[in-house]
Image (cartoon, rainbow, N blue to C red; front, side):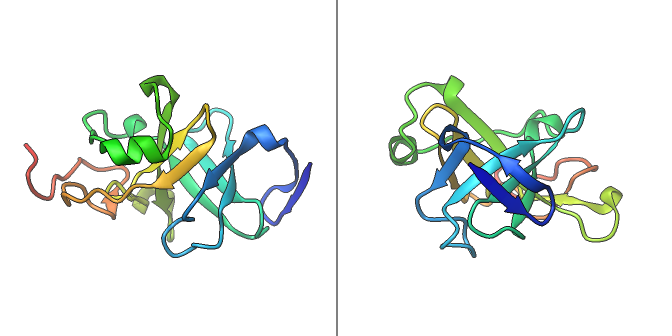
Length: 148
């Protein structure tokens, strides 16, 4: 299949490349299908909508920037995403770049959980408020509460 995008031009993909967000991403409930586009030799990726050509999110693995980042997925979320094995889990977080990359922030409070086997995904809002939603990407990890 082909997807026309404003950022990447035409992308060829198959149904097996798609991630399905049953409830969309908060603020984008009608956008349910995305491609995860990697960028060579970069920690950054794009989550590209397959229904709106101009819509994509810059994402990154939080572990590339904050090795101590961790959280536990509840059993009901694991069930909803059909996660049977932790090797099927990929975590990315939305990156916000306003002016320059050096001032970018990452949303650690609401990671995107991807099931790489079943191709299911969701943005999981961490209930404990431990991590910031505007964590400076190139700064020290600040624990909001309950952290060490």
